[in-house]
Length: 365
Image (cartoon, rainbow, N blue to C red; front, side, top):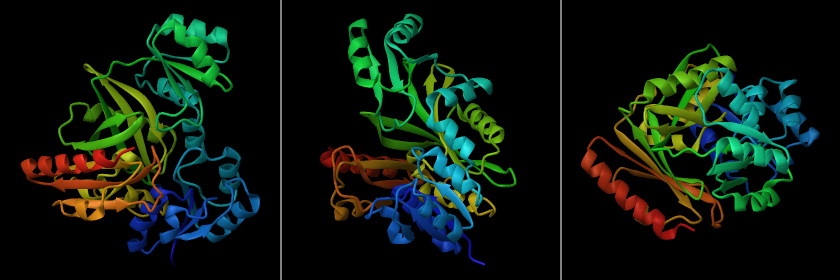
């Protein structure tokens, strides 16, 4: 019998989940309020708001299991679905990751090292927190922040009033500024039966809070520690599906930044760079299927297209490069697609990656 997976959210992550699952005989239904949701090309589409009870009931009735592609979903919607049909990852993981405070409290509970942090609910709280962290520090909204949104870097006391006026209408958190050497992430998957697999560490480069480049790191010295961190989280939450944990490397220390209870931008290189991609293993996990091998197939990297994409023919002229267009209208700061490059020859790989980055940078906005 064919398994039908419901996905709350219908953007590029849902699109790639469906594209990975269709060859396995899986079917997909998305719930997304956008008429032009990108995943609709590979799934059936319920075009309604995420908190529409009629739509949520329809999704539950049509699907065997439900997952989600991003965190900014009403908690009440996922609770409603979970009462009717299995939801993976469980709503608890979504609720924790939606709030930076509960997320960091979980890390601390599990003995995962992280930067200092303090809750900020008033202007006086902000003053007190800055006195403890020192400057610079980063003021963030506790919820609804992604790709650098909902953040203010405090570099001087003169910035406090501006930061408070900009962000102070919602609950906040102040984090100590981390002078990191590198930003990395670990992407892992856990099956219904508790099997855990890990992909290679990704080393990540951001501009303006948006990921631009992710490269696989076959011999990263933090691999074992990163795997240990994410394993603690997966097992504590009895998690099913793919999770990403973003981390800072500071000398010989590894500090947790945040987790994503879903497939993740920094794992896109796994589509062509690993035996089984993060997308395929996520749908395998939530559907109760065995996980596939995460072994790498050579050097691999992903370059995001931000704002606009290069001319497809120029990308496809490159060897060992694969284009992923999300079908989105170009717009400044928007992820409209990406390309992966991989290969066993290190010299050719680096040359093709350099050319791909030039193409992406030329159109970025």
